[in-house]
Length: 328
Image (tube, rainbow, N blue to C red; front, side, top):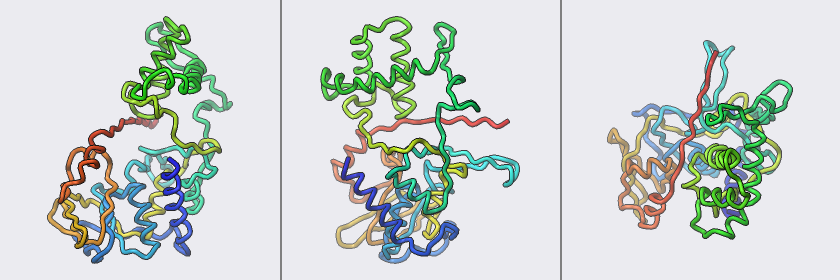
């Protein structure tokens, strides 16, 4: 975990230090399908999400020739901001994917926001009324046809996270969060409505809301072990897309360019083929496509990826998180 943090810190530091006089007002060079080819012996990056754009920007500013190939007709991946409204003047920006900036102290994303002059404002997720308290936040219990004060769910979720170490000690390393929740309910002699509330708080309120997965599929051993930054929660009034737009501002990005095969060798570099038959040659390739694309085998690797890499792709999973936005 610490090595990953160090890598992210080094990457973002390289981006920030080497930007020099570049400003976020410079537009990315976006190409249609048939325009100029990638520079020979450059580095090809597949995917224009935050990972691909960050890597491309760092390499570009370090003097490498880089081209980014993106299958969709927009950049940013899951960091996509959508403008809703009849005109630019009354448009509301909606983040269809990533939306929160949790903690600004030591957070490299906050550093990028400041560099690109992207405004972020403090926002307490529970302060949903004008008075700033959580009096209007309730959960509906369909069994009893009553509303539950959200503090009840918060209590069970918080107390469960504080009990995780003891639960891990009592269970084996293969235990799921669901196993931990059952033991937590048993250890605390919860029954009836209280047991249901506790289960809901853990399974839905905590696991699904935070991790987009089920408690049965989540590991208890690694629950709540990710790094966190201090400094409160923030949102971007102008959308998270300002970050990816800033990263892409000096890059060569090819949209609607679907990669279907990557041929690589130790001596002769790489050849990347697209679905319309074009080929891009480079010295190296960085693949940053979503896990689902790798699982679907939509990209053929020649030769095949190593067995341990394919095994990791097969074993790893991911959840889905749906958003609903209402305009009125």
